[in-house]
Image (tube, rainbow, N blue to C red; front, side):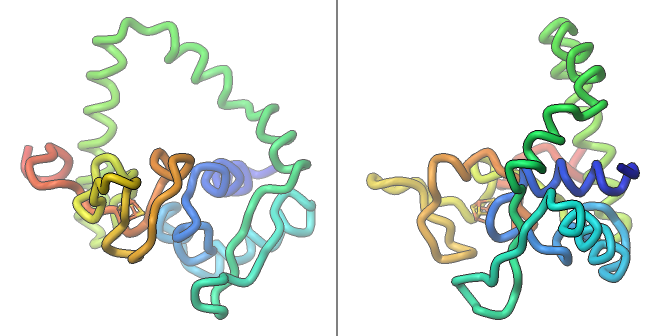
Length: 165
Ligand code: SF4
Protein backbone atom coordinates (compact mmCIF):
# COMPACT_ATOMS: atom_id res chain seq x y z
CA UNK A 1 0.00 0.00 0.00
CA UNK A 2 1.26 3.46 -0.92
CA UNK A 3 0.74 6.51 1.30
CA UNK A 4 -1.97 7.75 -1.11
CA UNK A 5 -3.78 4.39 -0.96
CA UNK A 6 -3.75 4.47 2.84
CA UNK A 7 -5.08 8.04 2.84
CA UNK A 8 -7.85 7.04 0.43
CA UNK A 9 -8.79 3.99 2.49
CA UNK A 10 -9.01 6.12 5.66
CA UNK A 11 -10.95 8.81 3.80
CA UNK A 12 -13.58 6.44 2.36
CA UNK A 13 -14.00 4.85 5.81
CA UNK A 14 -14.74 8.27 7.38
CA UNK A 15 -16.59 10.21 4.67
CA UNK A 16 -20.36 10.49 4.43
CA UNK A 17 -22.40 9.37 1.42
CA UNK A 18 -22.17 12.83 -0.22
CA UNK A 19 -18.42 12.68 -0.08
CA UNK A 20 -17.44 9.11 -0.97
CA UNK A 21 -16.54 10.01 -4.57
CA UNK A 22 -13.16 10.31 -6.32
CA UNK A 23 -13.77 14.02 -6.89
CA UNK A 24 -14.43 14.71 -3.18
CA UNK A 25 -11.37 12.62 -2.33
CA UNK A 26 -9.30 14.71 -4.76
CA UNK A 27 -10.37 17.87 -2.86
CA UNK A 28 -9.58 16.24 0.50
CA UNK A 29 -6.18 15.00 -0.65
CA UNK A 30 -5.35 18.22 -2.57
CA UNK A 31 -4.62 16.30 -5.73
CA UNK A 32 -6.01 16.21 -9.27
CA UNK A 33 -9.20 14.31 -10.08
CA UNK A 34 -7.20 12.05 -12.41
CA UNK A 35 -4.71 11.12 -9.71
CA UNK A 36 -7.51 10.56 -7.17
CA UNK A 37 -9.38 8.35 -9.66
CA UNK A 38 -6.25 6.25 -10.25
CA UNK A 39 -5.83 5.76 -6.49
CA UNK A 40 -9.49 4.74 -6.13
CA UNK A 41 -9.22 2.37 -9.10
CA UNK A 42 -6.16 0.71 -7.56
CA UNK A 43 -8.09 0.11 -4.32
CA UNK A 44 -11.00 -1.35 -6.30
CA UNK A 45 -8.52 -3.66 -8.09
CA UNK A 46 -7.23 -4.75 -4.65
CA UNK A 47 -10.89 -5.37 -3.65
CA UNK A 48 -10.64 -2.90 -0.75
CA UNK A 49 -13.28 -0.55 -2.27
CA UNK A 50 -16.40 -1.20 -4.31
CA UNK A 51 -18.39 1.32 -6.33
CA UNK A 52 -22.14 1.75 -6.56
CA UNK A 53 -24.09 4.23 -8.71
CA UNK A 54 -25.62 6.98 -6.59
CA UNK A 55 -29.35 6.54 -5.90
CA UNK A 56 -29.67 10.33 -5.60
CA UNK A 57 -28.51 11.43 -9.06
CA UNK A 58 -27.88 8.13 -10.90
CA UNK A 59 -24.71 9.56 -12.44
CA UNK A 60 -21.97 9.69 -9.82
CA UNK A 61 -20.49 6.51 -8.37
CA UNK A 62 -20.15 6.25 -4.60
CA UNK A 63 -17.41 4.05 -3.13
CA UNK A 64 -17.58 1.99 0.06
CA UNK A 65 -15.07 -0.17 1.89
CA UNK A 66 -15.42 -3.90 1.41
CA UNK A 67 -14.90 -6.36 4.28
CA UNK A 68 -11.32 -6.79 3.00
CA UNK A 69 -10.86 -2.99 3.06
CA UNK A 70 -12.10 -2.81 6.66
CA UNK A 71 -9.75 -5.67 7.61
CA UNK A 72 -6.85 -3.82 5.96
CA UNK A 73 -7.71 -0.67 7.87
CA UNK A 74 -7.43 -2.55 11.15
CA UNK A 75 -3.73 -2.98 10.27
CA UNK A 76 -3.29 0.74 9.56
CA UNK A 77 0.28 1.75 10.54
CA UNK A 78 -1.15 5.05 11.84
CA UNK A 79 -2.65 3.14 14.80
CA UNK A 80 0.77 3.53 16.47
CA UNK A 81 0.39 7.31 16.22
CA UNK A 82 -3.21 7.36 17.44
CA UNK A 83 -2.24 5.21 20.43
CA UNK A 84 0.33 7.85 21.42
CA UNK A 85 -2.20 10.66 20.90
CA UNK A 86 -4.70 8.78 23.08
CA UNK A 87 -2.18 8.90 25.94
CA UNK A 88 -1.81 12.70 25.80
CA UNK A 89 -3.44 14.76 28.54
CA UNK A 90 -6.90 15.98 27.44
CA UNK A 91 -5.76 19.62 27.47
CA UNK A 92 -2.75 18.84 25.24
CA UNK A 93 -4.99 16.91 22.84
CA UNK A 94 -7.43 19.84 22.65
CA UNK A 95 -4.59 22.30 21.92
CA UNK A 96 -3.16 20.03 19.24
CA UNK A 97 -6.59 19.56 17.65
CA UNK A 98 -7.21 23.31 17.63
CA UNK A 99 -3.81 23.99 16.05
CA UNK A 100 -4.32 21.32 13.38
CA UNK A 101 -7.81 22.65 12.58
CA UNK A 102 -6.40 26.16 12.17
CA UNK A 103 -3.53 24.99 9.98
CA UNK A 104 -5.66 22.82 7.68
CA UNK A 105 -8.41 25.44 7.42
CA UNK A 106 -5.94 28.19 6.54
CA UNK A 107 -4.15 26.04 3.97
CA UNK A 108 -7.54 25.14 2.43
CA UNK A 109 -8.61 28.79 2.40
CA UNK A 110 -5.32 29.77 0.74
CA UNK A 111 -5.95 27.23 -2.02
CA UNK A 112 -9.65 28.02 -2.31
CA UNK A 113 -10.33 24.40 -1.36
CA UNK A 114 -13.20 23.08 0.79
CA UNK A 115 -12.81 22.56 4.52
CA UNK A 116 -14.05 19.17 5.60
CA UNK A 117 -16.04 18.81 8.81
CA UNK A 118 -19.05 17.02 10.26
CA UNK A 119 -22.74 17.74 10.82
CA UNK A 120 -22.69 18.84 14.47
CA UNK A 121 -20.56 21.88 13.55
CA UNK A 122 -22.23 22.63 10.20
CA UNK A 123 -24.59 25.51 9.51
CA UNK A 124 -26.53 23.37 6.99
CA UNK A 125 -27.65 21.06 9.83
CA UNK A 126 -31.14 21.59 11.24
CA UNK A 127 -32.01 19.76 14.42
CA UNK A 128 -35.61 18.63 13.97
CA UNK A 129 -37.71 16.85 16.57
CA UNK A 130 -37.59 13.73 14.43
CA UNK A 131 -33.84 13.89 13.74
CA UNK A 132 -31.29 16.07 12.02
CA UNK A 133 -31.90 17.41 8.53
CA UNK A 134 -29.29 18.60 6.02
CA UNK A 135 -30.51 21.72 4.20
CA UNK A 136 -27.67 21.38 1.67
CA UNK A 137 -28.49 17.82 0.60
CA UNK A 138 -32.18 18.25 1.49
CA UNK A 139 -32.13 14.90 3.24
CA UNK A 140 -32.57 13.48 6.71
CA UNK A 141 -29.30 12.52 8.36
CA UNK A 142 -28.76 9.14 9.94
CA UNK A 143 -27.28 9.13 13.45
CA UNK A 144 -24.39 7.09 12.04
CA UNK A 145 -23.60 9.89 9.55
CA UNK A 146 -23.34 12.76 12.03
CA UNK A 147 -19.62 12.31 12.73
CA UNK A 148 -18.63 11.57 9.14
CA UNK A 149 -16.47 13.87 7.01
CA UNK A 150 -18.40 15.97 4.51
CA UNK A 151 -17.22 17.96 1.50
CA UNK A 152 -20.27 20.27 1.75
CA UNK A 153 -19.49 21.20 5.37
CA UNK A 154 -19.88 24.90 6.18
CA UNK A 155 -18.74 25.93 9.67
CA UNK A 156 -21.39 27.47 11.93
CA UNK A 157 -21.13 31.19 12.49
CA UNK A 158 -18.74 31.87 15.34
CA UNK A 159 -16.78 28.66 14.88
CA UNK A 160 -13.10 29.50 15.27
CA UNK A 161 -11.85 27.57 12.28
CA UNK A 162 -10.31 29.64 9.54
CA UNK A 163 -9.13 33.18 9.16
CA UNK A 164 -11.29 34.39 12.04
CA UNK A 165 -8.45 33.55 14.45
S1 SF4 B 1 -25.29 19.08 7.58
FE1 SF4 B 1 -23.37 19.87 6.69
S2 SF4 B 1 -21.81 18.34 7.23
FE2 SF4 B 1 -23.84 17.36 7.46
S3 SF4 B 1 -24.28 16.36 5.51
FE3 SF4 B 1 -25.20 18.44 5.42
S4 SF4 B 1 -23.61 19.72 4.48
FE4 SF4 B 1 -22.61 17.85 5.16
